[in-house]
Amino acid sequence: MVLDKLSDSLKLALKKLTAGKVDKEAIEELCSEIRKSLISADVSIELSKQITKNIQDRALKEKVAGGLTAREHTINIVYEELTNFLGKNFEEIDTSKKPTKIMLVGLFGSGKTTTAGKLAKLYKKRGKKIALVQTDTWRPAAYAQLQQLASALKVDFYGDPKETKPQKIYKNIKDKLSEYEIVIIDTAGRDALNDELTTEIKSIDKEVKAQEKLLVLSGDIGQAAQKTAQSFHDAVNVTGVIVTKLDGTAKGGGALSATATTNAKVKFIGVGEKLDALEHFKPKNFVSRLLGMGDLETLLEKAGESIDKDTAEKAAKNIMKGELSFTDLYNQMDALKKMGPLGQIANMIPGMGQMNIPKGVMKQQEDNMTTWKYLMDSMTLKEKDNPQLLNESRIQRIAKGSGRKIEEMRELMKQYKQMKKMMKMISGQSSKMKRMQKLMKGKGGFPGFPGMPNA
Ligand code: GDP
Ligand code: MG
Image (cartoon, rainbow, N blue to C red; front, side, top):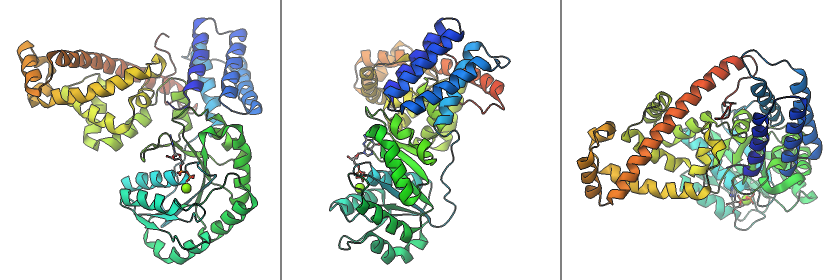
């Protein structure tokens, strides 16, 4: 998942806390582990110190809130301080104005053009009328790159491969843009923000007057992020940040903490090369996932985008009740496929993030899913809705009918039973979560479940 390493070391630090007594020594040790984890993830030393100092001061000073154990209290402080550091509350980009102009700026290869496509896809899903505009006259292939994305997404595209002045490209098409709800403007980058690029983006900025000026930072930029963010901010007053490539081995902490420099919040994160690999960045949910507490909200959001609303609601209801039919399983597998790699999804399920499931297992599971779909296609509707009907003769018939091996059918039955058990566990976790949310009310709210399975 995003920031695997940081996540693992934070989870380990919290696990240590579970093992012993929560006293001064344990808290100091926890903070020292967290500080080391943050520094290894490229968060600056000063920031890391600041964050852990806040955690330590609060954990030692604040009284344990009623209904919480000392451990839960401390974990909640860790959660709150990490959330504060990442921008605290999530605010969606305001797209009410027509057209809402979103301009992307950033260095070479940070992911601007890809992200322009991702944003177009996201807002198109929401039914917005979109134009993609290329003003990059620096890279010869930039025009074709965005044009291809636009044509794949079936959104309108503007640019001019012959014009050399970016602001002129925009000026010439400006009038046509008023019919769109969202206009996404891609710009050129350089290896570093030099005088040439500064002058260039300043003049585009003056022409475009975008409501949103989003700085695209690659997750692997490291501690250089602060300086880059500052200089872009000085040039055009960025209104938000997008951190890309958080799916890879990028440490990410540097780019994510750029917000502390610019005061512009991280709005989105890029988690893959595909056009739907873009997530809203919600600090609370992100930290919750980072600490292995899951993120049901984002999970359900993704599910909502991948399946129609009725199916999603029915599935969510069944999950909450701990029930599961083959129809649910089939729909879920269908949706899962569209939601992204299983490994990323697993981390959003409370409790599963801490299980550290090996990546190979996830890949195998993806292959199995294809086989299972064949098998389920051979079931009758009645069988799908009532899995208890599946006796030996029906099991044999289904395997035969789908042309699959009987062992594969048995494996599916086994998986089904396991999934059902997991659903029960998730439904148990979410009622605990609700209890926690009640207790935390007025304390900023807690979207994940702060307890470990072995708590
Ligand atoms: P630009 O120069 O800023 O326009 O960057 P591009 O959009 O051309 O992207 C540069 C490279 O980064 C391309 O190979 C993209 O596929 C890749 N890329 C962009 N965003 C992501 C991301 O979130 N994850 C991964 N893995 N690759 C990305
Ligand atoms: Mg580009």
